[in-house]
Length: 146
Image (cartoon, rainbow, N blue to C red):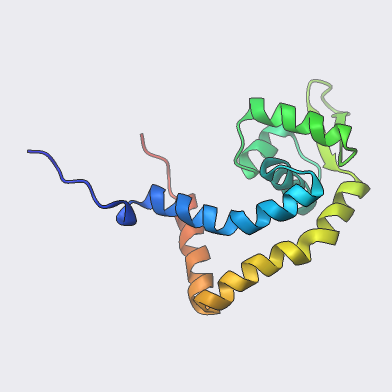
């Protein structure tokens, strides 16, 4: 017996992608003005919020594959938005941190970025918006099953 597929409006992966695109459309314009990609912005945000860290942790926090992160870090370093250095206690490890220029870029543009999110919050209502974030964070924290 074949199980019927749910309509795409009830498919969590598809609904999450649609919601992401709804939010990212206006933000992409901001990032384009800054000469940054979405992935570069995520890396800068993670470093700005979390401080210096290893690439593996950055990739986890920014939802990026490690091979992609390597290229992104090279570009951000070329733009002097980050700094990379060897870990003093273990020379095999690398520590990445946001540069003062990168931190300024984040600070100077957070208001525009936040305005997009605030508009969505206003449309949804603060309580429902916060509930959505809580539920998505709960989903993110569930154990992964194959």
